Image (tube, rainbow, N blue to C red; front, side):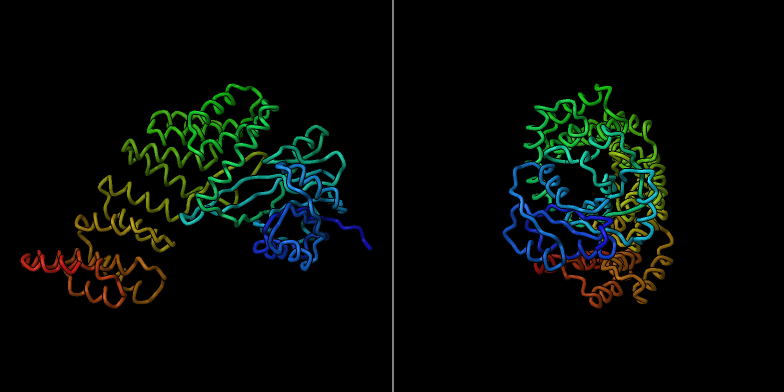
Length: 447
């Protein structure tokens, strides 16, 4: 039997639902799957065995590195790939992978992790060291946010960048995210009590504190990291962004601007600090500058897949529709109403289902002299079913009302099953225009 070339090493607990898709994504890529179970009470172990994995049981000791190192000891491949159950390997040709790992130039590779940001849309891109040679000197360190990077660096390991993407699909609800932060912060406090100079763990600790809204504690940690000359530039950038985020939460707008400006001076090609700067600009009603910043963000979104990752690199990309909607709002604040309407429509056409768009559109329609043009445009889109958006009929209703075509608006509302309560406002405006305010009381009773 040939020796496995690539071993997949995993630690799992109660992942019967997530595990099948994860292992399917590496089919034909890895030669061996090693799964260490840390205490599942569901069918995780049976599912893993049925899918061809070598399954082992390891008691949980509140130490992620210990569990991962146990998995390494069971692997027999020349290379190790690490995945979690809620991650999926992007489509990848094994011949291309072998070409990279057999060139003898590198001992490990940084890859990109792509995580969706839940219902709001958008993506978090981060880098992680997930592929490395199996070697007795290489092991995980850290009871949480564990990594083989420190041991690689101590032994002079060469690290390259691999154009490999891992999709993280396990987006967490806010309540679960908070519970996880509580657990992680407690573990990191224990670790940092003995390892005060670990700047990477310090950043993760500050992130956890920020999630828990322990802002004063987070700021102490972050300022300490900024004073530490050993803190790497990527971590300095992350610290500045966290401080800007906290400043915005605390309504310290000028302070937030100071942090974002400094962050971008160190690393201009990042998205998160730009997002925070836009929020600060909007708070200050600097809509023209916010408009220019948003246009820059749109250009960066178009080049998202070109971003080069690196050690400890992390960035957060908003949904395109979210940026376009905010751009529309900034244009409206400057009196550029037709441009604003175009952007609001674009946001809907690229997938936004935000109810705030309808409110924004309604607020600017009376300032637009060419509504008949937009009415015809929206009618065609709705009639042809070009875009399956539930918001478009609502937009058409608002445009018809603004044009005084209330009867047409009521027909559209009926045809597209727009709730009667939503249509009530159209009825009210119609009655007022016809001088029938005396009927409003009866209509409001039905509401």
